[in-house]
Figure 1 (cartoon, helix red, strand yellow):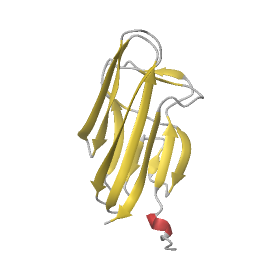
Figure 2: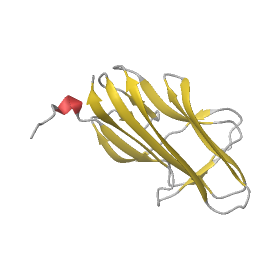
Figure 3: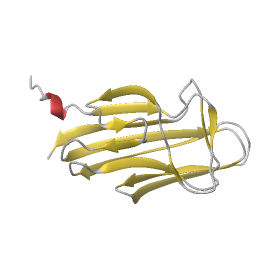
Length: 141
């Protein structure tokens, strides 16, 4: 059995909020997933909503975002302010809807990964954790 040094143990999951709707805003906003579920290696900053790669490696990120009112919901995943993924859903029925995605990214030490909510879009979360952002180190490079 191989044991990883502690600096190579990196994983986080965080829920968005307990307070219901997030947005819509007049401008794109970094989403602050403030409810830490797991944060091994302290790579995720729950105040800024940003993951900082502690070492060069291959990382896996996933997110699920939900809403329940009619309108657009969606979000960007950014690496160093460069959009990598855009997920979009038009909730035209007014019930719960969700969107999710995942990606593997090669990151350098200090690279930043965050989720952004486009202007006029909205998400929803409560104590049931409808909207979650997760990531972990697959292996160092």
